[in-house]
Image (cartoon, rainbow over all chains, first blue to last red; front, top):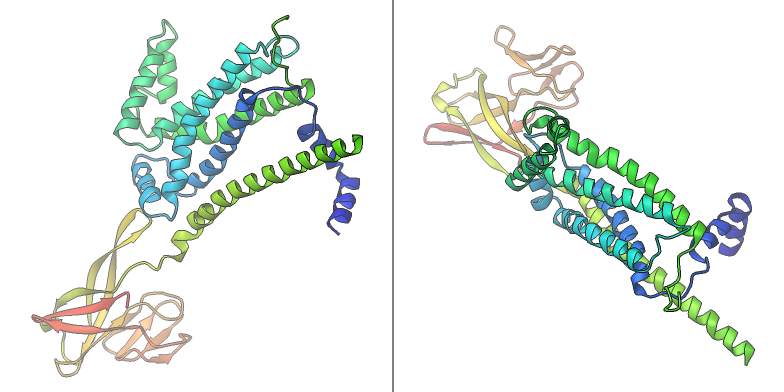
Amino acid sequence: MAVQFGNWLDERIGWRNVWDAIFLRKIPKVNWFYTLGSATLFVAVLQGVTGILLTIYYVPTPDHAYDSVQFISTQVPAGWFIRGVHHWGASAMVILSVLHMVRVILSGSYKYPREVTWFTGVGLLLATMGFGFTGYLLPWDQKAFWATIVGTRIAGVAPFIGEPILRIMRGGEDLSAVTLARFFGTHVWVLPSILLLLLGFHMYLVIRLGISAVPSKEE
Amino acid sequence: MEDKEEKDQLSRRNFLAIATGAIGGLIGVVMAIPAVAYVVGPALQRNKSENWVRLGPASKVEIGNPTLFKTVVESQTGWIVTEDEISVYVLTEDGRDYIALSNICTHLGCRVRWINDQGLYFCPCHNAAFNKIGLVESGPPPSPLDRFETKVEDEQIYILLGG
């Protein structure tokens, strides 16, 4: 019955070809370090799910942000868990992407024909950093506020363009409701869109080109 | 020999597929259960426990005439604490037993007003009328005005909210 239904569906949507191309593709004999990219992808999905759940209660305005986060952590059932996973997942995401990148460097996987995969990977790392930076402000506590003061100041010390960049990031002279709103918008709309586009492209290239083998001594 | 190897290969592949599916399913369940609790949680909470709210001095109530009391009650929705003014008509015929009536019309929630000349509560929305003790006199309301439990302590009238 299930097999029949599967056949019926596959005849119409051709999902088995796609499935095989993604999950049953040939790969060289590699080691566990080659799973770091998949680990990063897994955490990214987890961040997406927990992030969407957090927006159900979180309100990005100065008079509600802190209280709504406290409400999530202390009042909502499993709220501490959802927020905790998102909090620690953010760190895991950065660590895993960097480890993945180190592996790609050490195994020389960025070389022909995989240069574009590398470029999109760099873009993904930058997007991840952007997530970390914008997400850090959202709880709107003292740590968040002052970390963002410092973070935007760092951008501000760049010669010539620093000052305008700082003003654009803050949405004005000071860190305010405008800053919180634009960090939130960036965190939940702009960066996820960029991440999805880059990730789709990255995955397409990984599947199309196949992954590289562990380099041997003779090479 | 060739056949046996082929079989072993298949079972290894199947084992990995099943293990991957099982671990994935486990992770899915571990995430899904808290997620459902998280989303529906606040909907299941019955907020507010019972509490006695002071309306004012019992001496303010005119015997035989409904007297309006207004008081502010705090309520919490989510992380926001709001203060709402509630109005309550208190009636006594003998200065000992008190009836406290909500001024919220049981039809669609408009506020009723006591009109002394006619001896009735009127609702401005659909011309409903309630008599002195809150029973429906005319109009569309499906039930009498809500009553609060009352008590008098140290010459002050209290009503029970959230009961």
